[in-house]
Length: 186
Image 1 (cartoon, rainbow, N blue to C red):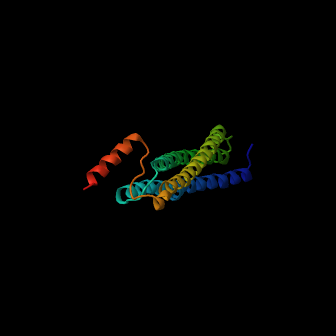
Image 2 (image 1 turned 90 degrees about the vertical axis):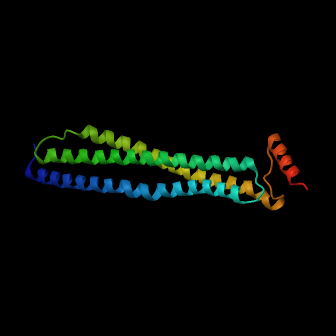
């Protein structure tokens, strides 16, 4: 069934799959730490920056666009977290694929037929689905950051053309502003 040359090739394959599994295991940490930390920092930092702007500035802001900015940055955070989770599942599936490939090669090395072919194929399919899910989620996180940035900019652009107070957007806001102006009047 298997001659000595086939066994030597299977031994090389087994070594390759073991090495590949170790590299993938290391890449779980490296890949996640670069992309998703960046997306978390920009979306989370944008939320903190908006709160800082509101608390420390007399700029007139359009609340409608401001809340859309908060919403977009929160979506960016959520999809980034989801992307990080799906990337972990992706790498775990690919790691399982490589380990199963190593076991198959070891079986061939000993002159036996591979036993884990179905596991290799299933793990590959799972990894492919979650890889695309992670990528799409990360892209949505980036798009949410860009959309949130546009909304935040739209919220503060009127600041140069209006008085230094928050622009009222509801009847309650008008009453609050009237009460504040009444108290400030001599």
